[in-house]
Amino acid sequence: MLHFEWTQDLQSKTYRDALAIRKEVFVEEQQVPVSIEIDNLEDKTLHLVGYEEAIPVATARIYPMENGKHKVQRVAIRKAVREKKYGSILMQEIERHVRELGGKRLFLGAQNHAIGFYEKAGYSICGEEYEEAGIQHHDMDKMIE
View 1: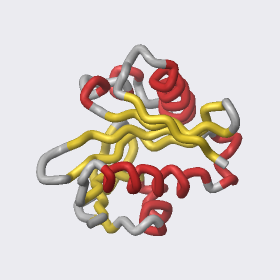
View 2: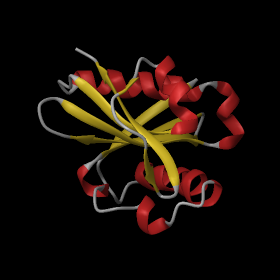
View 3: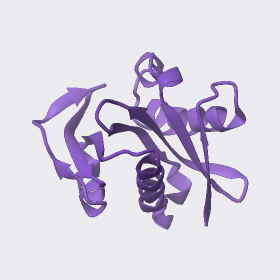
View 4: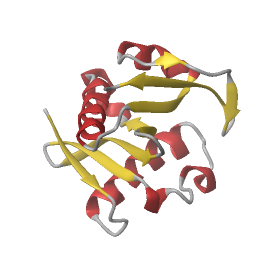
């Protein structure tokens, strides 16, 4: 079972745990440059970490936008626990928290290989294919009212 922690404090252990997962998944596994992975939105976003016992295993960040829209970014699950379906639990926690904040719509840029995962979570493609950090993506969204 996962325990979740949310933070906006860039000095917190939770944020450092989020960065460690992101660096492992995006920078090391997917070869995304650190300069792209850690951007100027870090202090404008909510950071979420899922812990298995005390070990950080899943993360995402949420960027609040206008009109109840929230952009889900940096969704990452450590390779060692991907078979445990923690991604689905993480997405449910994001939806719960954003709804609690008054959010009405979730939006994200999905790597093409992950489109099926997001479709199972209720997201639909809402844009043309584009490339980011050398990886093909599609925008997807979900209404959560």
